[in-house]
Structures are given as structure tokens and as C-alpha cells.
Amino acid sequence: MVDIAYSVTTPKDLDTAIADLEKALADRKFAVLWHLDMNEKLREKGLDLEPKVRVLEVCSAPRAKQALETNLDIAYLLPCKVVVSRQGGETRIGLARPVKLLGTLGDTRLDPLAREVEEVLTEAVNEAAKV
Image (cartoon, rainbow, N blue to C red; front, side, top):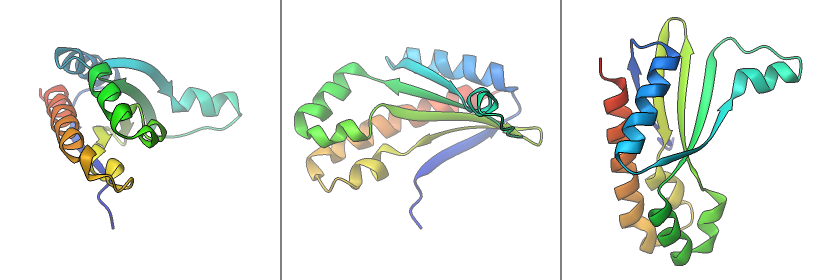
């Protein structure tokens, strides 16, 4: 099985975890392009979801430009996804691992950039989870 995601738990509530994540991302020059509230979207369709799930689409513009100039197919995988969820009193913060995702393209020219982005996003997730 491919370990496609990295995640950590935190005792923080969902909103605090998101706020701390946004700050940690901004400190590392990643912009939050969009917030997806999965619960709200499903509610609009008449469906309830017990765990709270928020998806943040994040981007480092210079890194995205570099990746797109290297291989345009990377556009199918951008922007990076960071997820904050809460279920059963536990909050998780995690990300889809760029090394694994970009590896699906089979273009080794992207490997150093994927490692760099994954390292930076992992640092942001870990910082946001700290109490």
C-alpha cells in the first residue's frame, strides 16, 4: 500500500488547528487558495457527515511555476492539499504527500522539488499541531 498521506493528531479544536496551520503555512510562504468545508458541501446535497473535514488548497507560487515549467502534467495534481479533520474528540492535520503524488508522473526531474515541498508542508503541519 502506498503511504499517500502524512498526518498528526493534536488536542486543538478544529478552528484553532486551522488558524495555526494557516499561520504556519504563511510563515513558509504558502498561500491558502481555497477552503473546502466538506460537511457544508454535503449538507447542501442533503447528506450528513459525522467527522468534520476541511480541505485547504495551498500553493507556493514560485514552486508551482517551477513544477509547471518542468512538466505541465503536474497541473493535474496542483494545488497541494492539506486536511484538518475532527472525529471522536481527535483533531488530525495532514497532507497528501507531494513525493508520492508527483512520483505517479514518472518524471524524476520533479523529485527534488517534491521533496522540498513535502518537507516544508510537513514542518507546517507539525508546527500547527503543537500545543
